[in-house]
Image 1 (cartoon, rainbow, N blue to C red):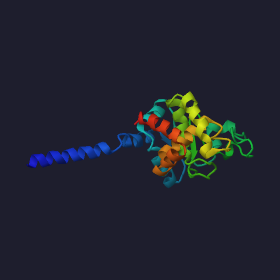
Image 2: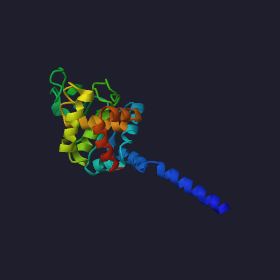
Image 3: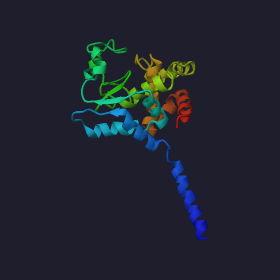
Image 4: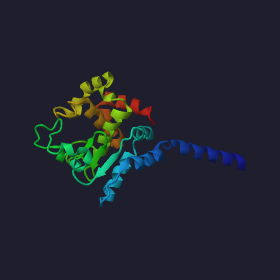
Length: 217
């Protein structure tokens, strides 16, 4: 009888372990490897929240970034103060032509390195995206891990059909499929609420991303 109870307990314990995402611990470890923190003082609370959100990305995708040498720099000052972006000081970025702003005002970028300002994660902090660090990181994932899937025929057809559902006339997400991919991927991973919004308002996009990311868990 004791043996039966023990086996039943062991089975339940194993089932509970199986319910935990396999990539949870791996993602945290990989984020720690990829993220570069400032050498001077910085807001550790804000940076910790950014790292926690990045850890929601499946480990296999983060592994792809690591394998390709991609780093995510969390910075205190302007992104153009970083040596990788110094040449963009005073230059107007794509999609910002009518704003009067330059790269000096942009809080995040994804090029050979992802650079995002600490404390600028949320919408309204110099950007209109749901979350800065996820958006910029998904640009890198799209580019170096998923072989520019945002430019694929399947995704661009979906983008043309659904981008205006939420982003009509914004001149950015509705104008560039890679921006739409980065933002909708952010919605998919940011929270259950944003994931639900994506599913309800952009169902074809949700279905595409759901199938895509199921292969990377």
